[in-house]
Length: 359
Image (cartoon, rainbow, N blue to C red; front, side):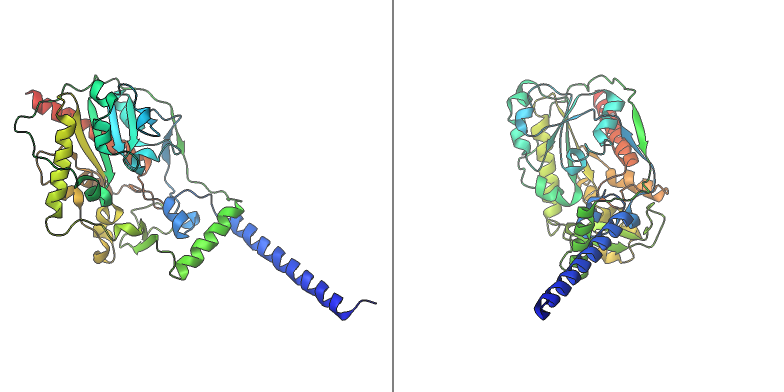
């Protein structure tokens, strides 16, 4: 005869099996509901692509037309453009609508991209390749909230007689093959993503995960996603550093010192491209004005000698004109149209600057 203990063990085993099957059904059901993961803000914050994925078409290139170096050792020959940037320039290869593609399409210039999170600017300027084969253009790109930290340490008085850089490389416009990514309406089926989402969601509800902030908006037409009255941003935008006392002046002085160091060879032209924070670009549409942050592009522009693309005005104008997804709603980066806009306005700035200097 079967003992009572054996019966209890069988019941416990059956209950555990049922619990496991129920949990598996929940995970599979959630995986079927979720759209494939795309945005960095949805990933770290425990938000769904169903609510925050963009619904506007995005242009992509068949392949990337720029090189992202793994380190300074990859800088081993002449390039028309050397770009020192962060995730807006280095982490867009997978999507294939990085702004360097648009820059190449407009100019045909060869482009090397180095990661500011791995390589210091002075290392590039002191490298053999830069000294022997200086580029015609050096682009410094930085997200706005790290601009102070990345520039304020540069020191030095501007030269009284600054050599005019050489002419820009000849424009060789390209006809590049590209396609369009349309909004996705398919299921993920990724159980690891589903479990990760549940974990991030639970941590956010318990107040343990504050990496992504959800800020209410007064206008629901700025983005194409379902929850378009909410702005997702990284937590560190709220603590934008270095803007007390004379820090704005220190930042401008550092940016100008970097420009002087780059251009002192009389060959290379420097230009700075800042990616505005969401909390500064969309500040006027935030339901809580206190969530808005200082416009550091405007602060930097107070130095008239600085070669600076006014991305705050360019992108702000796009938002005001009714363009959706200037920034992707599920991500901290630009939509494809913004990549193209920034690239073309940067080229326009360089051409206008050269024309003014040659008069």
